[in-house]
Length: 263
Length: 205
Image 1 (tube, rainbow over the protein chains, first blue to last red):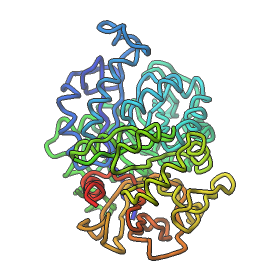
Image 2 (tube, rainbow over the protein chains, first blue to last red):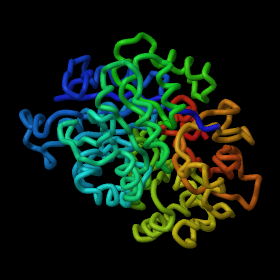
Image 3 (cartoon, each protein chain N blue to C red):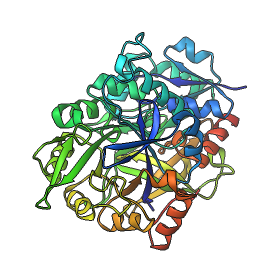
C-alpha cells in the first residue's frame, strides 16, 4: 500500500534556516548544516529545502566558482545530502537546465522550480527530458484576491500573474512536471490550516502527485489536506516549534485512517 | 574494506548511492572506464530515465562487454537499481522495443494499473519478501522502501523473484537475484533504515 507522505519544508535565507510568515517576515531558526542530521532522523518521508534568498546574496564571500550565484547553496546541499537517506528536493532560483544539473550533482534527487518554470515553461520540458519527469517538482504559490478567487504569484510572492492555479497546473503537467507543490501565500505562517479549496482545485485537474503546503498549525490539518485531495502533505514552521512534530503528526494521520510509514 | 564501482553512463544520481555506501563503511567511486571497474570487487548500476536511452549510453560508452565479464564471468557481486535493474532484462518496451543486457529472461513493461491510478508509482511502499536469501536476508518481511518508476520487470523464470510489491491492485517484481547478480526496483539509497540494511547485505554477499 502506497503511503501518504509527510514532508518538512526547510526554508533557507542567505545560508541560514528561517521561519516565514506571509512570505515577508523571516526569522532565523538555525544552521542548516548543523541541523541536517537531526532532520534526517525525523519520521518523515522526504525533505524539501527551498532557498528563498534574493538573487546574488551569496556572492559576497566567493567569486571563484563557475556558477557564481549557485555556489554557496550548493555547498549546503552537498552537506545535507551526505546524511539524507530519503528523497531530497532542492529549490530556489533555478533558471536553467545547468542550474538543475548542479543540484543533482550536489546530491538532490528532485528540483523544485517556480518563477523559472512560469516565465519559461520550456524549462520544465527540458528538465524532464534531461533528468526524468519524476525529478521535476513545480511549485505554485497562490494568493486569494479580494473577490476570493485564487491567483498564481511568482518571484517569492511579489509578482501577480493573473493566472488561476488550475490552469497553470494543467500547463505545467503538460510540459512534464512530475509533482506539484501547491502553497498558499495567505496561509504561510498562520497555523490555521491549508487553503483546502485551493488544494481541491488543483488536485482535481492533476494527473501527478499534489503536495499541499502553507498553514499547518495542528496535526489534524494534514488529514484535512489529504481529504481535500493532496497526495502528500508538507509544512514548515510546525517542525521547528512543536516537540516530536514528526511522530505525533504520523500518529494523528494513522488514527484518521491514513496509511503512513512508521520507522 | 570492500570497493564498489558506481557505473557512470550518464543516467541518474550517483551521489546518493555513494553517500549511502560511504556511511556503511565501503569505498565507493564513480567508474567511467573498464580500467576503473577492474579496481572494484563489487559494482552498482544505478539509473533514472528511459530504457532505450540507457542502453544506447551503455553501448556508446563501451560498458556492455566489461559489465558482462564482471558480473557473468568473474561472478563479482552486481546490483542494478531502478532503471539499472530493468536493464538486466532481455527486452524493454519504453518508447519502442529495446534489447537489454539480457542477464535475466523477461520483459520490462508499463505498470498494468487502472487509468485512475497515478503513474509513475512514486512514494513509499512495501516490499514483500518472497525468498529471504541474498539481498533480503534479515530484512523485515514487509520493508517499506522508496519507489519512483512507471515500468516494471516481468520475469520469465519465477525463481529469480525474491521480492514483490503491490500497487493499484497489481503485484510487480521489486527484487530479483540469481547467484551474484541482484536488482532492486526501489531506491535502497533513499529508503532509510530498510534500504541501508539491503545495501549492507549487498556489501556482505
